[in-house]
Image 1 (cartoon, rainbow, N blue to C red):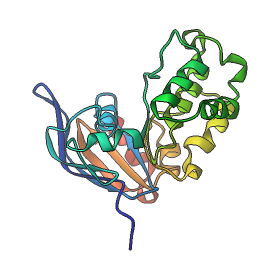
Image 2 (cartoon, helix red, strand yellow):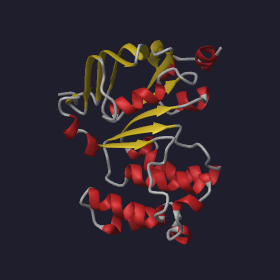
Image 3 (tube, one colour):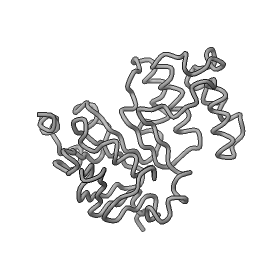
Length: 228
């Protein structure tokens, strides 16, 4: 029997006041697959990630994440999702080590898990520094560690390689890349790169799906049209 989809959206809408951030969005993401989401600023990309992360409630349609209906069973989803947003979601006056140990306790994990990730991302030398003193690249590495600390089956990644040089991007690739085996939803402004690592491509414009197709069938020029 085929595994149940990781994400199922049927006619999903989300408003901010009278303005629709998402309107009548329907899609299915298979377990272990990668969805890449393109679109200009304000198209609805971050709203989609926040909705899937249970941080926002839909105003219409049906949302099923990891087999659970949202928002009714959002409590059953939150601990199984890893969110990497533009905001690092870290306590800025705490060190990288303190942040990760705190999140480990929240997930009832041993502190050794935090140490493992600090080592894998080569943050040991800066682990005691307050995160507010870290460069954007180092901060992004800590945020990646926080997002995957609890080994979530679903990763929601908002431009995950932002502020990372090639060496740093290579460090986090085993944690959040396709080889991690996780279901992933990635926002991207890089048509060629985003399509290359995805199974399904979604292009948003004004909250609507202007493009939805298998990534292998989408030409980068079609993605570029979303931004014109």
